[in-house]
Image 1: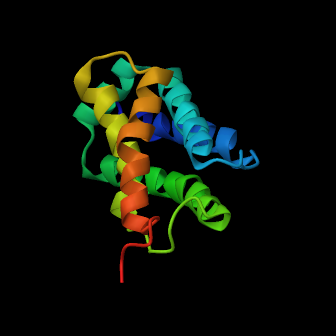
Image 2: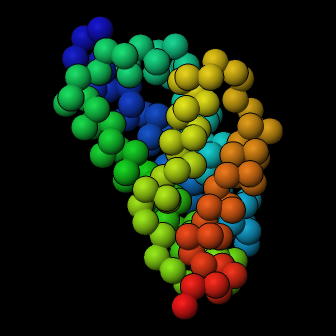
Length: 149
């Protein structure tokens, strides 16, 4: 695969996901905001294609991984952080700082589903990732219940 092609393909994927999520207003619910973000990312991923993305990952060198990491970090800052900040403002999550590794956990889980499980990823998969893993993690880390001293 040419270096030029590798450098071009991830950009539309991230740009499409961002454009679909950055123009939206908050839904008033962290769960719904996250579902919209993940749906946009998933749709963007499928535009390029699962196999194409897998091959890109398999053939990527350190430079391309760096570019992809920067793109995804920017996407997280503009989407997940905004959703978490909005949720904090509504009182849905606690006041404790949420580390970046925790913020991006949902994206890592989605990546795992797409690249490694070979199972179809659909809305029910996204709902499970959000409801069973991410929201409980965010509640615990942000101290939603006010249990930290």
